[in-house]
Length: 214
Image (tube, rainbow, N blue to C red):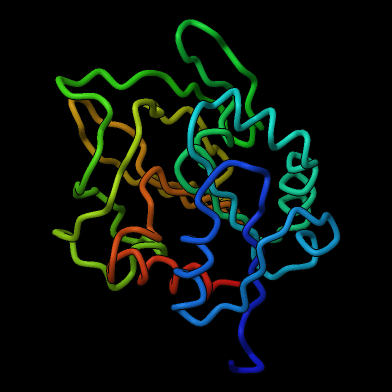
């Protein structure tokens, strides 16, 4: 492995296919470690937060592992973090599942709620609509498909940036029954609702793009 390989920690808080993420990151040249160790996670070039299952269970697991401190302090110092699937959803202010509201990390305003679609969960391959200036989707064709598995999503992007000196977040959308947020690039914080680690060459390109920013 190259001495210049970026160190990426996959945060292991009990939710998410950490081995799949580890393999995908190693495939694109990262030096990967799966851990919940606070210092290791803080000192890595990049932190990846996976997530599967219920919003509330993921938040409970994250708090038990001090994950909210790791994410918050990394971002306060401009250190890159990437969330995947429910690992993206918990970055928002709240999640509502079966009528129960759970507080998220509140890095972004907004609510994760049920998908309104003829078929739920949204499981399988789908296209996305990325901004023309996206760094995350650089080199990825508009017709490429990504792998989704979810029943909940963010339907409205609520963060407004009024300072012209601050770059506005770049939001990517997908549609399954209704439009929903499929990915976000916001300074040091990036996230995807789909699974890049399960999305073949297109997903590998996304991970390569993220690692290239570390």
